[in-house]
Image: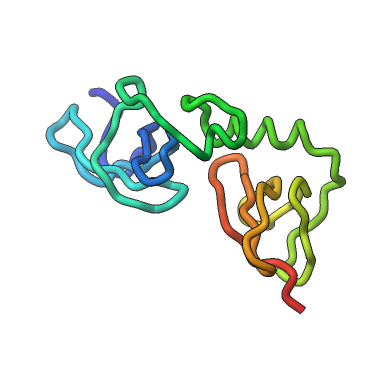
Length: 137
C-alpha cells in the first residue's frame, strides 16, 4: 500500500497560488497515481502537480524575498522573525498595520503581509494565506 488516497493530504504545486502548498486529494487516476487535488489555501481544485517537477515563477514569493520552493510555513516563519510588533488578538474592529502579529482563534498566529483597501488585510498564517476584515467600527 502506498499510503495515498482520496482525502489524504499531499504537497502539490498550486497553479492559482503559484506556490507548493498542502492539498487534499480529491480523485485518483488509479491506485498509485493522484488525479485531482484541492488547495488548502485558495480552495481551487486542479490536476496534481508534482512540486519536484515544476519550476515556479512566483511574483508573490519574490515580493517576500523567498525562493519559489518556499512553503507557506517558511514564508510565515520569515515574516514572524522579521516582525517586531507585539502579538494581539484578532478582531474585525481593530485596525492592523503591515507587520503586525495577530492571534486568530481559528488560524492561529499570523503576520499582516499587506493592507487591502481600508477594511481588509492579507495575513500569512502557518498553513495558509488569508484575507481578513479589519477596521470595522
